[in-house]
Image (cartoon, rainbow, N blue to C red):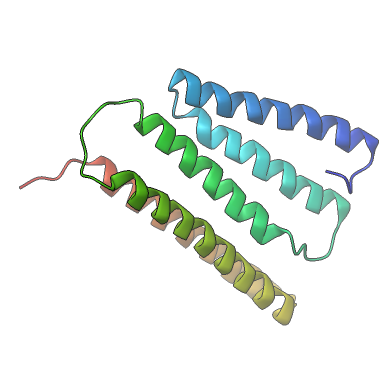
Length: 155
């Protein structure tokens, strides 16, 4: 938010505070739908800063992406820990390693994408449509995986 003007910084501080309150309320009260709201507000604020500031490629964006992923994953893990169940020895350590792996993987993927975008720097409707199709495919993949995890195993 430091790159924006005073009005943007003021609005950004308010949006950031709402995102923080949503995240804390989601974890403390056990309201899982508030966690993606908090992540969307924080990510949207960052995207708005980049769009309004008309900034070139931001080398901090992979860290922001990894940070948002880690924040939401840890928040959901906190919600899962509210229920008591006896797991296997070492489950917590394995989960922590997996979450760390997700953070590193998100950082690496975002860095590669940023380097690819920087290298291409092409313009045109075809490339825009290809990017939009890739974004839709990525969201559809996430939704399919999420739906498959929510459905109980049959058989």
